[in-house]
Length: 128
Image 1 (cartoon, rainbow, N blue to C red):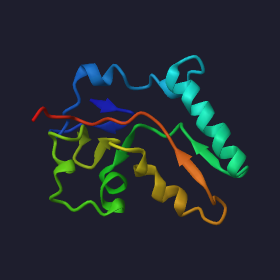
Image 2 (cartoon, rainbow, N blue to C red):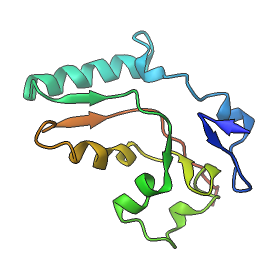
Image 3 (tube, rainbow, N blue to C red):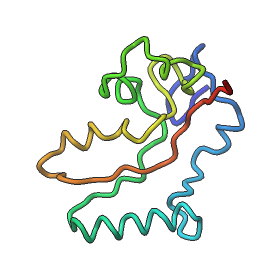
Image 4 (cartoon, one colour):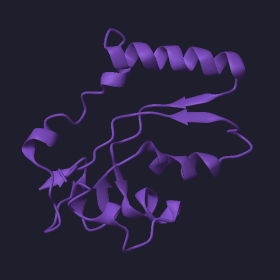
């Protein structure tokens, strides 16, 4: 099996209910409350910096390098646990935060000087 072109393996733990929500892109729907808010956020930041880039179409799957390693999340950190993160395979997850894309855009400095990343994020929450 595959998800967004990434082969699944024994670490795959994404239930059908979550898979059904992938690609909804509520943020990009102009009449949805999230879409309305995103437009307002863009307008505000565009007034502050006309060159600000708005990133909202990145894929919801990212490598564990981008999601954890690049952000200095230690290998033993609980957020890496399959009880907290949805794994496609050993090296690929559903992003748990949009920070997973930030290093990519920071490396584009000085061409990209300011940006905001937005999009769906996926966290497995346990009831304590």
